Image (cartoon, rainbow, N blue to C red; front, side, top):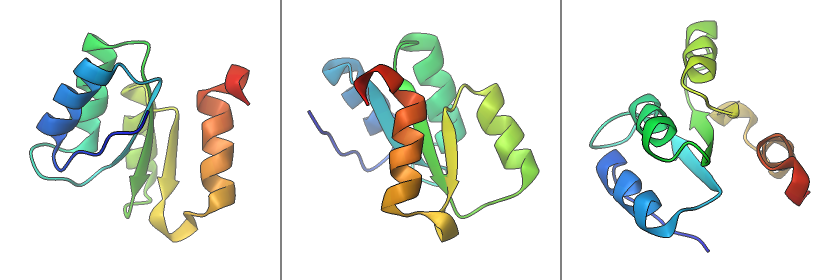
Length: 96
């Protein structure tokens, strides 16, 4: 099942109703950033894995992503089918 949201608030509400295994989100979005969404998902739906995509590539973002429970942070400049497939294997290894 796939859902699409236009903001962090909408993503959280959709995740709460769909109960997905995985959420792929951007760091920058309307209605809160991806880190806030990851934190809220971790608190409210801890079984949901989060993959984040970002135009920001600094180590501070990587550390913050790990701290918020993000399984993979993919820089947009490196976003490819292979990068996404590797992140999905880390997030859902039993599904691969």
